[in-house]
Amino acid sequence: MYHFLIFLRELGESFVTLVRVVFMTKFCGKRKINKVNKDCLILGNGPSLKLFLENNYDDTRGKDVVAVNFFWKSEYFTKLKPRHYLINSLNYWNRSYSDFNASGRNETFKQLAAQVTWKMYLLVPAFAKKKKEWKKEIGINKNIKVIYFNQTPIEGFKWFKNILLNFNFGMPRPHNVLIPALKNMIDFKYKNIYLVGADHSWLSEINVTEDNVVLLRQIHFYDKKVKPDIMPDGRDGIKPLHDVLLKFAYSFRGYHELKAYANWKKVSVYNATKGSLIDAFERIDLSKTIDGR
Image (cartoon, rainbow, N blue to C red; front, side):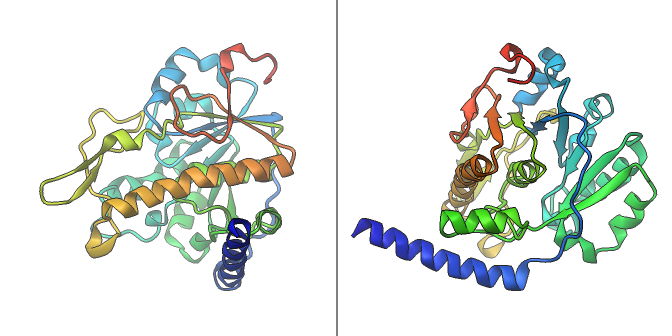
């Protein structure tokens, strides 16, 4: 009975996914890249990244570096010269008054255009194709090549998901920027993918006020001081606790789905973040690896 219920659930998810793909997925054009190294290193912006870059900088060598979101704020941006830079949040293009990061998002494309003096791939959602303003900024810098990806949530039977993922029709729900970062690096067929700065230690940073407002302190390695804040875009503009936890659940489940996809593509993914709550990937200490594994 249990397996039959699982079958029905996955059947329903597969049907809904097909509908999503038909109405949400967009053509992304050619997605070929030139790799410098066979392995890559994805830099999450979690608090542990600061110590990693200070104490394990040499472990970044011999790998194509992948940076995300506000990494341009760090002094390490021009030192590491990331091969890939990925932006996931639609708020970079759908800016609103309630977006407390609006000023930083406004500055992101200007800073990328101004600072990048090396060949770099900028990965952004296919949704951004229709937006012209950011293209004017990025178009100034000929070192930056834009590559698009689909954010359409892919769910259902395992074989069904892998096929749709392989055609870039979508990905596991991208509630965290590391989901599309991993998905794209798997697509680019890096032999080994390493994760650092992927703490995902949000659970200990949640607080509920006496007015039943859920606050979350989202700490990034480049932040000097972080205050708890609401997670917007929920009911009445504020997410209730169950929605916050559901978002986290989708993220952690997405890593397990990407693990299965990576195995299918014969790509190895390792979590080199000490203390990370991600339980999908084999743990590894980069300082003890030889020739990238």
